Length: 493
Figure 1 (tube, rainbow, N blue to C red):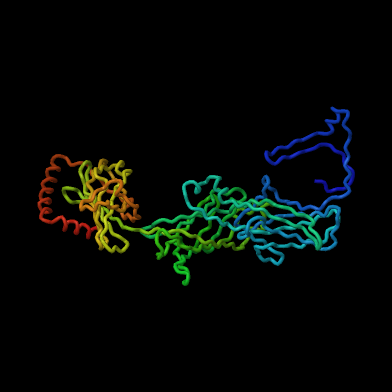
Figure 2: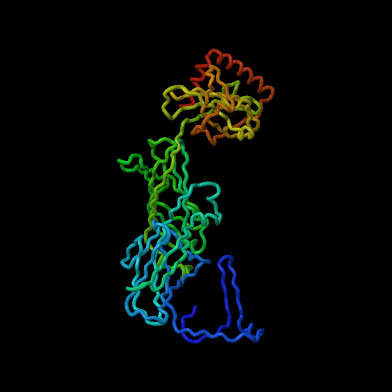
């Protein structure tokens, strides 16, 4: 780019293509030596147009910036051979999309989302004036947590990055002097990922602040959260209800190359499980550098200060609700004790309690997962029907055989709605057509282990059988109904 007037001789020609990116260079002086018919080419420049140039380094066609904190763009306004004796101005605006999350700092020190103008003092011919745009792009994307996007993969940066085009217009009172377009690429200071889950039968909301994919110089920045809240809208006429944050107070800094998790206990919502509930999320934070001596000139120390940044976003998501609470217990088939031995059948008693009010009794399918049966357990009948009374309680008993010695985890249990057949017969059956919707459960014994003992020797077995016969004769005196009622009451105590 020539910024001088005068007479110039052609030495070489360079041609740059955009797609594909190639560069062609022609050495005109060497070509003249090869071809005597070529003559010298002279160029007379008597006028240089004004221009706007960016001092910051760009990556390819984009100027790389950081979303989530204040940024600066250094611009140079060159007058060329013209003179601008009066003040001019330059306006900055976003092109093509509605400006919701990009803010500019105006001349009065206020953050505005609309078009902003900066005054430029008079400039003499062949002189330049440097000015800085200060802007801030909010981290707006909150993505759902899944196995592909929550990792240290560089693709995370692409998922959270924001691309936009900035229009610069240098004007005076009568005309537009220069129009320039800047392609901006904002890499996030952090990524936000969310999901819902269950904790001890209660619905929780999980928000991950992901910083494992940030690059230099962002890996020198520490985030200091000062306030974070989540409110649930239950009624338009009433104020939103604040969810309880389970993280300890005060909030700890979020360091580079780490992932931090916030967890809220969600209040009960009157909406059904299939209806999204509006929630309002707000995060206030500051940024600081743990290695200020390593910050280069491109990454201004002036930007690392105590200024607060705020993220406000509405999140609509369904709230999981637990249908049944499950409590399980093992009993030895003979001694009615809690001791289980290898290759000896045990009664696996599964007790159910409905957490919703039942108008009438209903039937559910209790299923033991196959993955656990292959891990030390054998159960011939994996699915059973359980009738849940209108009081909300029910029970199913499985005969299960431990096949390994030591501590075995309790089998996983799933509950399904029972789909009755069109022919309303009194006898209920289980097949693939009878399995309905899978119910959400809170399994109190999930993760619990039971100690499986070795088989009894000859003398110990005879003693055990004698005591077993005595206990069995006593048990026969009780009805099956009283046994089930007694076990159920003991389990829920």
